[in-house]
Length: 95
Image 1 (cartoon, helix red, strand yellow):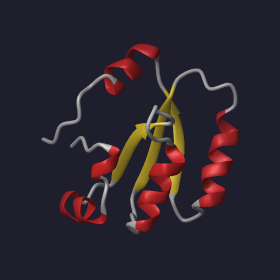
Image 2 (spheres, one colour):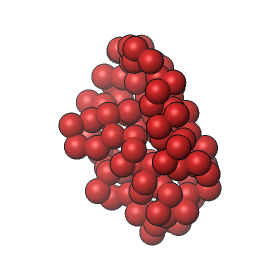
Image 3 (tube, rainbow, N blue to C red):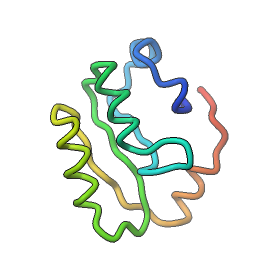
Image 4 (cartoon, rainbow, N blue to C red):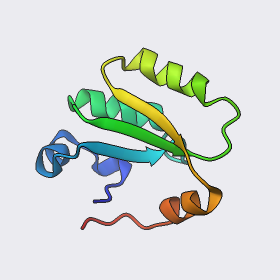
């Protein structure tokens, strides 16, 4: 299921019951801190993975997100540029 950032809510998480939430590390409208905050407010119990390409030091972002949201299962997954563009250029849709 694809949900845009503005559609991320406790209600949608309750309906979909995802075990995993995936987003880019940063976009023009939100970043992984915003998603982490939303998931924490919604008491999300699954895993959150942020996707990125070519981060110079992903450990800095990992530490920052984990320090803000210590109970959130967070990590960064580095992917190829082609895969990243395929994911981020897609229109929001729900299956």
